[in-house]
Length: 103
Image (tube, rainbow, N blue to C red):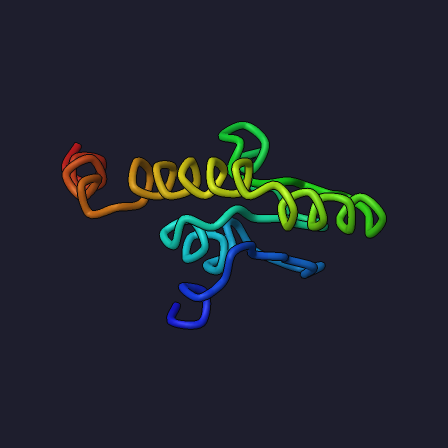
């Protein structure tokens, strides 16, 4: 997490990930957009506009260059990613999770 807090973009090239990779959540909590080559769990990157699902290396390079040069877009996506993480994964959701187990 300390290393991610110093970055600007998370680039994920993994071929095998289960569910939402922990690094995605850490990047979001650090207001960092995500560029993923192979994974877009539940379409969150595109649905919530928190990153790009590049699908191939050529597009990934274009996506990296775009966010590297466009600070306004990168910052906006970072803000959206942090909001997404807080809305879906923060401690404020503990009562919702607890309610699922108490049904």
